[in-house]
Image 1 (tube, rainbow, N blue to C red):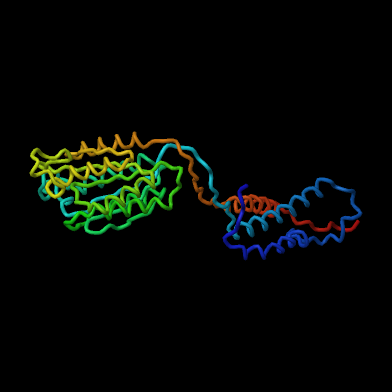
Image 2: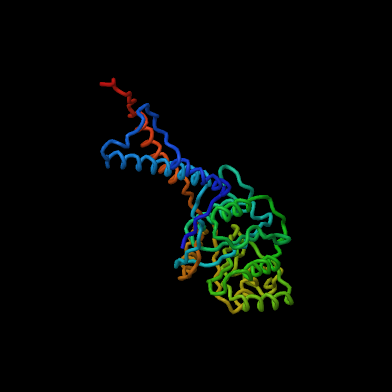
Length: 332
């Protein structure tokens, strides 16, 4: 049941003033000594009761409206399609370059700027998701925790085109992204969306820890690889001599992700259009029924009381303007 509360409850101390409308009359006094000897007039008695009631309503409505009444916010359970998603965004220096591997110029977008624009559209299309943002380069940084406030998430995404460092420490970024899920609901679909244009070498000892953490969290992983023109990409190049984590980090990171024993898909994007298409596929993959609590804001209802008081005051004013002065006639 919705609860009524007051933002300024001190105003309720004025409620006893309502009795003034019952004890005193605002009608004009008359020099006629008494009407008790006159026949009973039900209409006049009804009008007098109506005016006293209008006075009570006018005072009560004004006092209650001044107290700032509102209907307290409540939580309503909803059923929708969505997930808990942590966006793990690469902030290394290479993200400030275009997909062609050069500094932006002539209206070109850097990979960071293009990703920012497309990720914000992704957030707008998934209004029931819980989304968190983690940025990483040399060290990871939690930008926003899991939240159902799209404006806060988009503000966090807006910060991703600030200049970053050159080193990509993806292991620490993954560890922080997994830590974000510890406070989320266990029955909700969970996913990490890694947005990066490169990869780093993960120490084998850390790989074992990450495998255990992924298995414990039950998190799906999507890698949106923003491929720079001319790079080898996830598939890597031929030649056994060059087939090492240091020479082909993207290929070996992909192999590591496949060994996690969790749902995993990699998407290679070579431009803004392919990046947008990859996010559309991820959007389709992460739409599962879920229950969530929607927090409804409080509703101010003071204007309702003021409106009722205004109607009562208007009635009293109309009656006041319609009063007629009575003068005693000449004695016979």
